Amino acid sequence: MSTRTIEGKTISAIIACYNDSQAIPEMHQRLTSAFSKIGINYEIIFVNDGGSDNSESVLKEICAKDKKTTAILHSRNFSSQNAFTSGMIQSKGDFVVLLDGDLQDPPEIISDFVKEWEKGYDVVYGIRSKRQGSRFLNFFYKSFYRLFQKLSYIHIPLDVGDFSLMDKKIVQILNSLPEKDRYLRGLRAWVGFKQTGVEYTRPERSYGVSTNNIFSNIRWAKKGIFSFSFIPLEFISYLSYLIIFLSVIAIIIYLLIYFLSSEVAEGFSTVIILILFMGGIQLLSISLVSEYIGKILEETKNRPKFIIKEIINDNKNNK
Image (cartoon, rainbow, N blue to C red; front, side):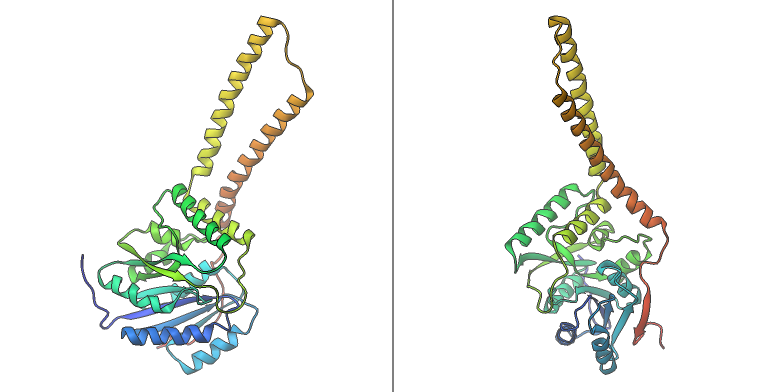
């Protein structure tokens, strides 16, 4: 495997923030400390994705003191995936690292990512070998990642989130993709190239309250599955084949009973059960197809992925 050096290179740290005003100063301090230890030139890009706290004023204060720090302010919340995309488009580093703004992605792990990049890997992702926090949520996340890997038509590593380092050529490819409803960890696997993982323990959120709940987690799971799997559609096909087969068997049994005994089983409740069963199957099929139709509709609207209200310290466009 080829080797590379960080000499003369620049790393871009992109942090997606949503109501993370308390965590932002610590994130900035830990990032600058990590980059100083690595001995690499850097830029830090905070993307404030329309939060309702005082993150904007906190970012302006940090940017006034550190000209290597850029703040992108979105006009509203466009999702963490589009916040990362906004930062990647703004970045000018030779490789970028993506982090959530709540400090659950430890900046100190970046040095391990860089070592793998030096070995020739183009993508280095963090593997959540352990998660601090609720056992129920941990079980839910681990179960989802394993189900998702089974359903996906590409190989997506287990227990992996957005926390990762990507070479500039990967970033350019991701930026060029027209897809609007993005699931970056899936797209990152889809592009290919040399990839590897680094295990770490994901800590609990240090500040504030998480916006994740059972419903948002279900929506997140659906986004991944319907973006990278056709198995729900195949399930409908297989289910229809099964129902047709069972229907033929039932007709044969009905005819045998009719001709052999001249008595046909009657029952209003049986008819109702069959109607409810078939109605349930139809509603399930329609709902699965509707998920894919909804994604197609979203992609055809041709709206921008995000709207930028302001960029503070625009180091990319300001000479």
